[in-house]
Image (cartoon, one colour):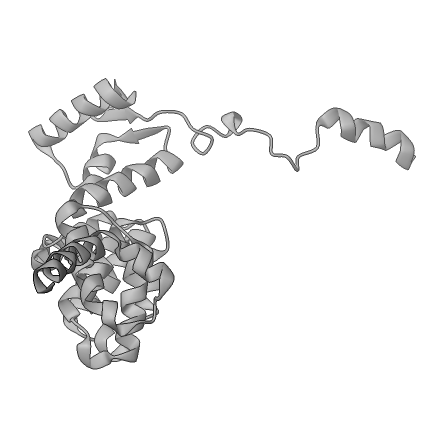
Length: 235
């Protein structure tokens, strides 16, 4: 009978590693799942997946058992949350982290990085990130995620963006930028134009933000002809 019980134990362990989010949904305040949640954070990093709910659950458990808190795990959670920008994940996670922990140098750095991103100060962001490579480079895909956000933000503002502005925002220059632009032209509909002087302009795909005329009428809008019908009634 003893041998028959050993196999289920191994099977059960394998199931738990794949159903962390189910454990969170069923019993999020059970401290016994804390190690599974920590392992899942590392899995998110190595597999480049993401679960805000699981990470928030772990941070809540740390609040109840602060002596079990791993600052390395917390830092990884914040980096993953930063990669989800423009979603407010970073602020949601930070709210659950004690102030004394936030005062540690690595967390102060992440808070500064978040502020730079929220205010679109990309040059300062990349300069600060370069000083803290040991924090951000521990999470694969960080640079690509921030570059995608920078492009997203530029696309909301510009119809045509100067090459120099794009280079600063995504932290790519020279031949690397040339290759990047070639890929975007081929796959994403970007167009390259010569600007005034020696500058190059990048024409971004049209959307309702950089081309307001493309904005669709919302359900709450009132067609002009309906407004016109009201005037005689008011008169």
